Length: 120
Image (cartoon, rainbow, N blue to C red; front, side):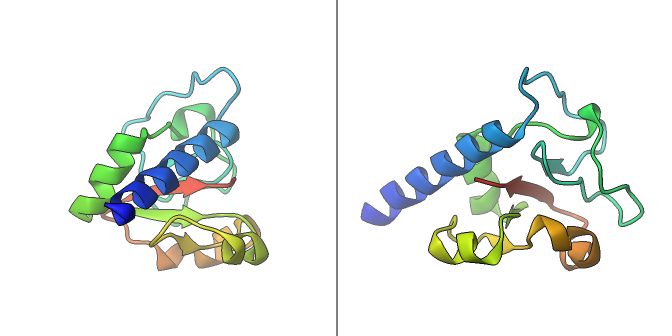
């Protein structure tokens, strides 16, 4: 039960982070074929995409959707904060790829899974 509560709290933190990183008006809809969620990190459908996302390239992901995707193994959570912030606290199973390194390390992410990024 403690693990479940911790996981829910971590996911809630992740969603709050996503909200903080997303466009202020929250109007960024999911684009067809989009595989990432966050307003400050690039999408990862292909390595050829640009590092700067456009409004239609990102979308928000709810806590429930995130938890379900992690449980089903259909998503990867990526913490784009610096290494010190990640070391202090992060979502369990989140992969650390600081935003400044994202372009160089994009190849580490699976192409067949939803990529959920957070930055707070």
